[in-house]
Length: 138
Image 1 (tube, rainbow, N blue to C red):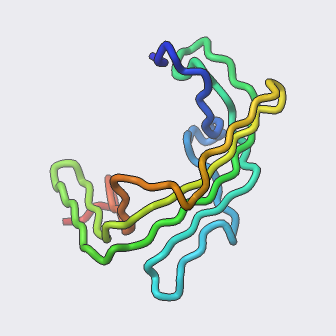
Image 2 (cartoon, helix red, strand yellow):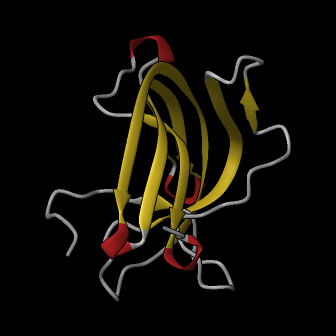
C-alpha cells in the first residue's frame, strides 16, 4: 500500500518480458576506472512512469523522464555474503556512493532535481559480483 503522503513514484515501466525496475544501460552508460575501483553510471532521459499510488492496482501511470549520475568508489574493504540455504552469494568491497538525479513529468508540468553530487552521501554501498538461484554453486 502506498504511503498516504506519497505524491510521486517514478520507476521504469514493466517490460514485455515481465521484468520490472530494470532498464537497458547504453554502451557508454557505465564506465569503470582503469584501476577498477570507481564505477560511474550515467543515464539521460530514461523513460519511466510516475505512478503515485503504486503498487495499488488502480494506480495511474503517467510518462516521465529521469536523468541521473551515480558514482561508487571502492574502499578496498572486502565483503562476502554467502547463504547456501538461499542460494545467494555476493563478493566485493565496501564503497562510498554519490548520486545526482532529475525527474520530469511533462504532462503534469512537474520536475524535481536533487542536490548536487558533491553534497550526496550514503550509509551503505558495495561493489562486486552476485550469484543466486540456479547459478549458485557451492
